[in-house]
Length: 145
Image 1 (cartoon, rainbow, N blue to C red):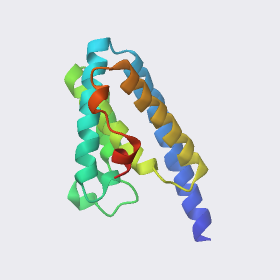
Image 2 (image 1 turned 180 degrees about the vertical axis):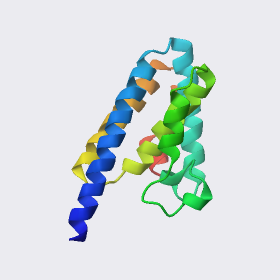
Image 3 (image 1 turned 30 degrees about the vertical axis):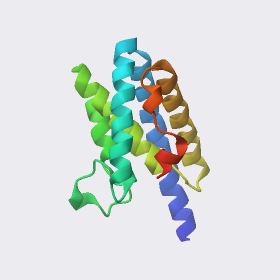
């Protein structure tokens, strides 16, 4: 019975992340080149900071919420990404991408695996659209650390 419950929880979470990803993707595509470069740099920094945390998938989550099924990093990132203030929006997108990546990395649930592949495409888009920042861009091994 427990595996069925976990599959249902994972499917619900995958649906939520995929819906949010579509909004993040539109926000990213609406950025000009200078903003994309800033976003690539911010995302790179967020990945480095998350990799140093004990639980990268809970990065950005307040300590009192540490034992929930998933953290609040994507929620915080989404609320910031919807901001009218461009620097806040960029930080929100970077946070959302980072937390969602770590949350879906290495999953055994197909629905979450599809979200992870979408995230990888978004990160490749950022890396390719900001060639000056790509010299210091993380590798797959660094992101997995």
